[in-house]
Picture 1 (spheres, rainbow, N blue to C red):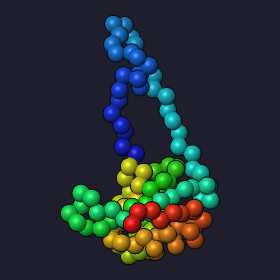
Picture 2 (cartoon, helix red, strand yellow; picture 1 turned 90 degrees about the vertical axis):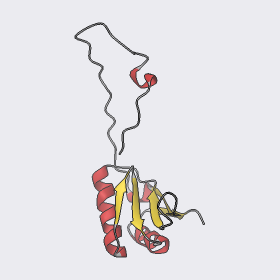
Picture 3 (cartoon, rainbow, N blue to C red; picture 1 turned 90 degrees about the horizontal axis):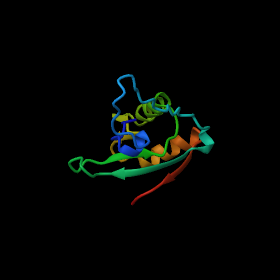
Length: 116
């Protein structure tokens, strides 16, 4: 996932330290893969900022990036088109909403078709 911009609250209010040996320890959050039947996925069509080209967008995946990339690769292969996985979402070139919903249901995901 893309790391978000850090703000002061992320550091517990620490802005600056004069201690030369001070190092701020960040907490690591580990992503846990939820079982497929507990995932709430949304499939939608997106045309914004893409030059009018339609893109099928799959959002709502909770888990590691490797699992997301593997799922994205499977969907792209089954649809026979290109696409990418970034920012916790799967982008598939073209309007394949119905096919993607069917494929995800076969894999055991809870899927909703959202948007027009």
